[in-house]
Image (cartoon, rainbow, N blue to C red; front, side, top):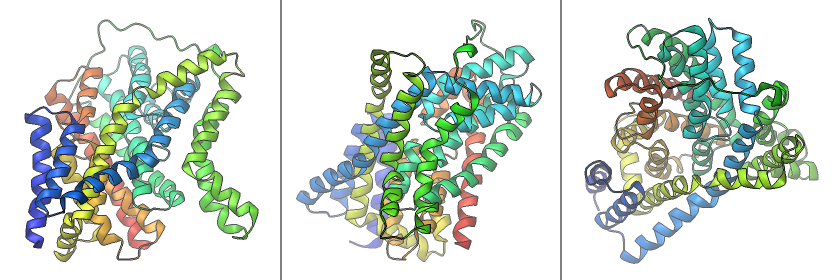
Amino acid sequence: MTTLTLVLTAAGSVLLLLFLVMVARLHAFVALMIVAIGAGLFSGMPLEQITQTMQNGMGGTLGFLAIVVALGAMFGKILHETGALDQIAVKLLNSFGEKRAHYALGIAGLICALPLFFDVAIVLLIGVVFAVARRTGGNVVRLAIPLFAGVAAAACFLLPGPTPMLLADQMNADFGWMILIGLCAAIPGMILAGPLFGNFISKFVTLELPEDLTEPALGQHKMPSFGLSLALVLFPLVLVGLKTIAAPMVDPDSKLHAWLVFIGHPFLAILIACLVAIYGLAIRRGMSRNKVMEICSAAIQPAGIILLVTGAGGVFKQVLVDSGVGPALGESLIGAGLPIAAACFVLSAAVRVIQGSATVACLTTVGLVLPVIGELGYSGAQLAALSVCIAGGSIVLSHVNDSGFWLFGKFTGATEAQTLKTWTLMETILGTTGALVGMLFFAFL
């Protein structure tokens, strides 16, 4: 089929997805499956190949993500139930003081969200915002925006977050470089979009504390130390980083090299961290094994819908690749003179605006650009930089089709107009800043 036909198929697929989700009110999982089939049919794929491609897309995505999500959910829930995450937040607030509490909340969100899903991190940490606002009598916007920015930065750019982990895996990026570039993107992005923007926008938007709010009981006397809490959160990052930093320094044929590569794989890193949290923290502090089992079971129950929707996004991505739609669109963008890093950002942003999910935007963009990128021989570091560009585009211009938009309004009491002025602008600043950092790294790697 002609390039124009394939490009129109890509555009029509995304528009159809928007219609099914927002107008027909179909569940995102069903909508993505329908759109994937439609893209295969209109691109001229043989009928038997469409079903096989869908199976490959689902398996290829969930084969990696299911393990990461399940172990990560358990790890994060254990840290929450033992008070480790609360300890980090309280320590940061005490260290920064009330006048700089908005910086403390941004950093707390960035650190505490590392082992958690975005929604879960907000649910667990939003009480800290209200507690500080009650003590200081400040505008909730000035404190909530930094927290949301920190959590969003971690969820978007930092391993071991499910979305950046999946993105790095699908792009065949180097995980060590993904950590480094992700940090360089997340930290300045969080500062600009969080404390600085939050302080600015609070002069124009005011949100009051909920009337029925009660004083939170953090139970500080039961918490582990701040040092131990922080070490546990960062532990899987250290293991993953060993593969990039330490492994090249030893003989590639040695047993030590093999072990460093082995424990540096995300599967092993999160599994080891989970076991350390269970046996080195929870059980050691007197938590019964039955209670640990309950916590782990409760942690993975909400992950089912996340995995299904993400797997459906992987199906759509694989259809775009195998049908030729992805290569056609990617080549047309590059042929138009748009640099590959900028193309990754623009495509991801476009899909994000149309269908809402950051994870699906990432997977769809990978399907559009990977066929082109694969022929250019980029290194793992360069692919990590491009992954950060895609991640940045996947969170800009959040609006009514994004669950995060409604989550912010629900917890802060903001109207839709106030959410657009606060949450939407914050996400756009964060995503654009992170993508610019990714483009800068890509230019020099």
